[in-house]
Image (tube, rainbow, N blue to C red; front, side):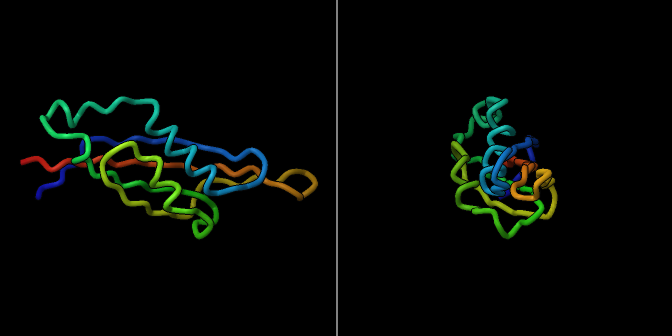
Length: 113
């Protein structure tokens, strides 16, 4: 199998109140994916399910992200999720709440000769 990188999609997501890393990560991946209609698999005569998607999420506390919830966003193909330190967390003035910003990258690969 010769997986070749076909697409790189980038998105940003937030949880305005609550500082929920998973919610922000899911929204970031949706932002990356939902602005496009990937027809690369169809153009190459491959089924959409043949796409391999590597998802990379950046948030301030990577251990707080539910990877399964992020992976569930993918509409087709198989995927992996890696969470790294990144993004941004902004506390409110009272220090009682935060806004969480997550960044997502989705690298789409296909098996091509």
